[in-house]
Length: 142
Image (cartoon, rainbow, N blue to C red):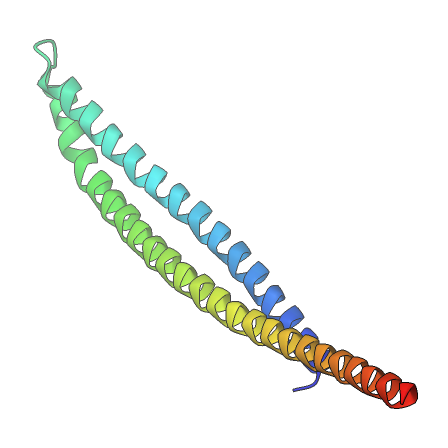
């Protein structure tokens, strides 16, 4: 592969890594948000149970809890489902970032290897030129 093509490929791979990092950040933010919603609903349910369990709770409060609880449990289940979906999206985003990093690393290695070989060729040419120069100077001395 020529140098220009490799450097273009490296740019594409670097852009892929940047996109994957952004996608992971967005997935983490969504996961945090859905987890916070789930925790908030859990806390509300606990709070309402605590109020209903208090010695000062009357039948009206207990009836209100009994009416509210099925709706709260449904919201809780939905929030937990959204949190699981967000966790899965985060896992996929992590995997995509790992794949993008691996691909970039591979291209980095190819670029470095090519640069190393180019340097070897230059050094061989220099040594060859020096050897010819020394040989010519010995020939001229005779």
